[in-house]
Image 1 (spheres, helix red, strand yellow):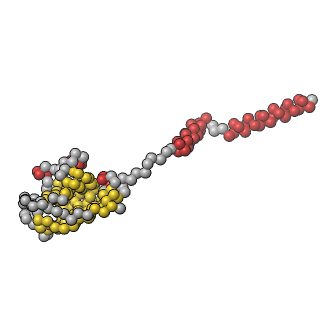
Image 2 (tube, one colour):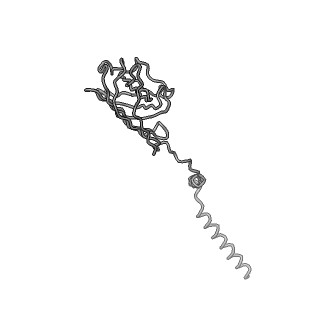
Image 3 (tube, helix red, strand yellow):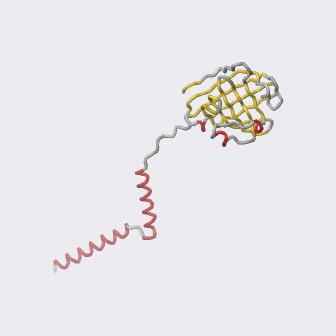
Length: 199
C-alpha cells in the first residue's frame, strides 16, 4: 500500500513539473518572435565593430591670402579686365577629401564672390591642390572649381555640376564657365604665400 501511495505521489509530482515546464514555454504563435529575439541577441554578441571611420578628421589646414593681377582674358565675364584681385582661402582638408570644408573669397572693386568648399583633392589637373563646392553670386547659386599651384591660381563658376568632372580630374570647357579668373601673367612666375599646417 505504501508503494502505491509513493507511486501516486511521484506521478503527481511529475505531473506538476511537466505542467510548470509547459507554462514557461512560449505559445506556438509567439515562438517565432522569441527565436527572432534570441537570434538578434546572438548577432549583437557576435558583432565585431569595424575600424573607426576617420574620414572627417582634419589632416591639414590651407590658409592663403594675398592679391594678384588677373591674366588677360580671364576678366570675370568682361567685368574686370586687368583688375587686381584680393583673395582669402581657408580650407580644412579632411582625411577623405570628400569631407573637407572651408571658404574661398575673391574680390575686386564692386565684385565679391565667396565659395563654400565641399571637397578637396591633391594633384588635380594642373593644380597641386584643388577644391570644389558652391558659391552665391548675383543672387544665383553656382558650382565652383578651384586650382592652386605655386605658379598660378584658377577659379571658375558654372551652372553645370562638377561631379562628373571631379571624378576624372577634368575642368569645365570655356563655354561652360560663367565666370573665371586666373592669376598667371604671361612670362612671369606667380608665387603664392602657401602655408600648410598639420594638426
